Length: 216
Image 1 (cartoon, rainbow, N blue to C red):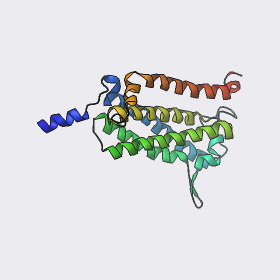
Image 2 (cartoon, one colour):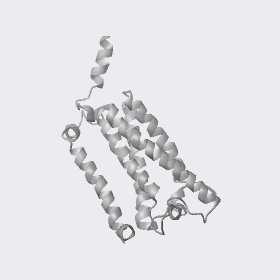
Image 3 (cartoon, rainbow, N blue to C red):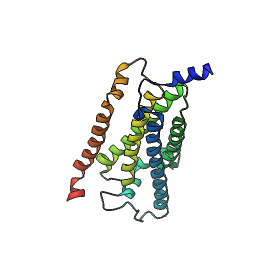
Image 4 (cartoon, helix red, strand yellow):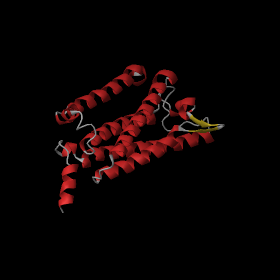
């Protein structure tokens, strides 16, 4: 009994309240990971449809700029290749997001994972974010076309990483003991301000780049 109480005390974080709870932080991560998973499944299905009929218009082809098929036919859509075999990015999205969904469920039931595992999980979320933003930048500034499902995937990955980072601090206690500023960042709700500015900056960038398409 004493050991169980001690384990609970070790699990409790100095960040209190529902906003820092495992159910809330990992719940948000679960929701956006599920959205990203469904989006990856849709992109995979449309990639297969485009392979069967290259000239077919997809459900997210609205014009020459807002077009999934235009993005899907570029080399950036299949950057992993083995010899003559190439694999669409969406296939890897299915695998990665399935893992994040599982990790979110594990977090929601308040399982305290080893420190090395928590660090690897966060690094995996960071890699997914960097990958999504690289694809977003290629779409925006190189291909000059917007894939609506890719935008959904990018925003979902962003929210997934934000919630994963919050959960890693509040539930898994990463960085809290060594850096007190991290705790203050969440306790004083600075994270909410940064998150809003982050998402607003992405929306502003898209609107500025393609304002003529949306409002012209």
